[in-house]
Length: 80
Figure 1 (cartoon, rainbow, N blue to C red):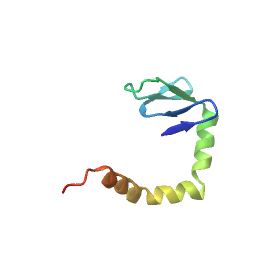
Figure 2 (cartoon, helix red, strand yellow):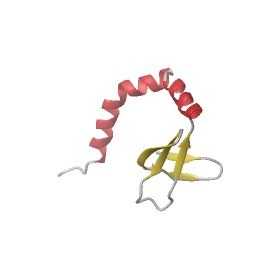
Figure 3 (cartoon, helix red, strand yellow):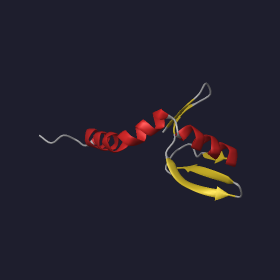
């Protein structure tokens, strides 16, 4: 995924997701040069769940299998 703001533009690959007390912690892939952690509170998770019921997310999830395999096919080198 890509994080873009006025302060930073960076690629963020998820390495693992853990729980610390009442927070969900998303930890970047250990191979990334910029180590990052994202802390989600219960209110953050509730907000994500509420937003997930939008038509944009639902339509993306329905199309996901096609999008996924299309992107995998595009990433494969063409044989001659």
